[in-house]
Length: 198
Image (spheres, rainbow, N blue to C red):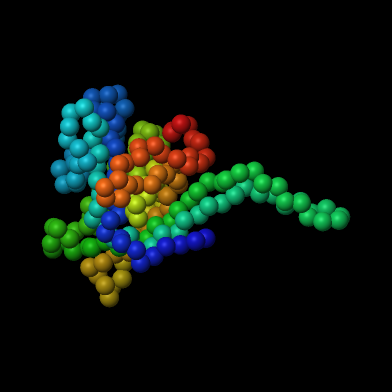
């Protein structure tokens, strides 16, 4: 499984597009998840009335990524020689490792508490049930999908920094423009289709 590390981690960010306000989906979503505190403290992608509300999370350092590009194959052993069959790409599951500050004495660096609150409103079940648009951006690339299996590791010798890791099921991806380039809004590379995102 190929991996990446030691790149410009500060440019990584996570975005969550909320359902359309006052819609049935939005009302059901806010009834089940407390998003008011999150909306007050998190950055907004846009505040225009005709645009969706997008929550932006940047209070983390992306330290390592493992990108998986599996293929569905089958090997059959015969009396003479083995035969291999290919059936296209499999589900792409990336693994992310992050670092966050955990200093409850300083609100600006109490990243862990906020990350946990953010995670609660967009767990895998919420993303699937409410068809939320969840994306991760890093290294001039953007991936749309579902994160799951969040874990945190605390160390008494580094009590102000917590290591975290999670898996990410990739649905679509696109290349982000560099400075001076126009953005390509088309997502490419859709993998395993699911009922939640067609």
